[in-house]
Image (cartoon, rainbow, N blue to C red; front, side):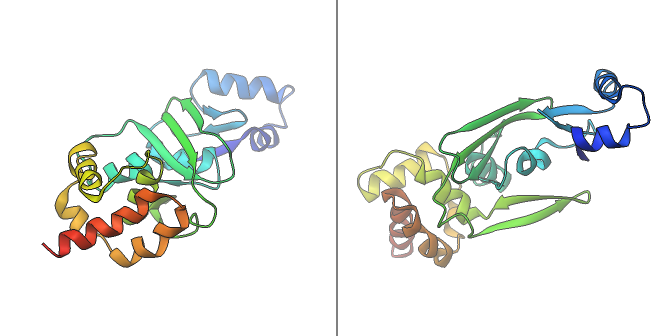
Length: 196
């Protein structure tokens, strides 16, 4: 469970020096610092469950979500999340992992992410379609549909069966909201593969 310094100070108010008590709890591993003013009480908590807590609003996306769904073969070591209005990439490192947050346009943020619950703890993660759109939106524009398709399947090593099962209507709905070339190209690649 995530707990803040304020909550710990309140819970330990009966001690002569609550701040020292919190320091000792952290030193003994009873609580684990995850960022300034915030602690996790369970050392076995999977790192992805903390991603939405460290910086919000956010949801897991980009490489992490693509790996989570088995769309790319690589195991991703960084918990990558989408957020908005932060103006720069934010990164946190703690005992549970490395967390990276990057902006997407505000108008696309509310679409197509879902709330999952593991062991009674909720977390937010992009759908497959949203994670892929988020991912290609941060890549330099790729010229030509053939080159873009090559990037998807040879560069990113996307699973072709997973790609072909994506919901085209979701991608069509959000691609224009990024105001970038690459998300729009996804629709054209889907159409091109259907017409083969």
